Image (tube, rainbow, N blue to C red):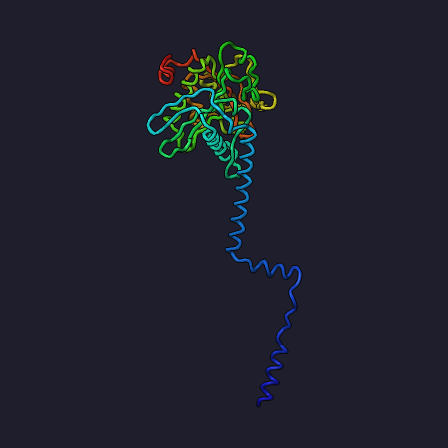
Length: 328
């Protein structure tokens, strides 16, 4: 019986497949399968950390290149209203925070970049002043405007998109407003009014005669560009003084044809619908008496069109002059 059991056990063992040593691709596949989910999570976490590190390094290099940490204001002003403080940036840390807000609005929201953080900065930021609005409850900067006065600068952002030599040749001090942005949760009449009060104070201190800048509408679709332009023309806010026109690079080549099409097909234009395309900040310009000069420029980088808006201080509507500048 014992011999029979032994013989049976031997036969059974002979039936088992002989395991071959695992080599090459088979070994790699086996090792890969052995990686646990927690290990994969650690790898992904490390990748995220590395990506963030590169983003931080890139931001630091830009801050250094554009001398942000050496920044000093040209004019200091500030006031508090409720839980908001409006002031010009007077410290490099404040400027960096404003540049990071601009990145979140222009690059993340408008351009839909996948980067989690960064700074929106160029060579003009060092020579300009920067108006900011801070929510004192959180200490967060929720809005900013770049103020470029001809008192301190002869280089203007708008000249890259528009022919404005004749405008700049006009007598008096000029003030270019630019890089305006407000956090999404703060795009209210109250915040816009506070920023305008700060701008008006800056205009008084720089004795500004002409204010100008780019006002953006977020679209690059030809029919929508035509509809917004047509809407502004219907509101009688478009004029063609000083030979202002988009530079060749930024010209909307299809605009004339689209405007002709809208004239022949007026059903395409719905005033209420098109008015909603114009941002509240742009609408505040119109209410103040600011005029749009010439055709819009097509800014493909930021997926929007820019209109050059101009206002002479002497022509500011009386109600707004009293509200923001004390009718001075």
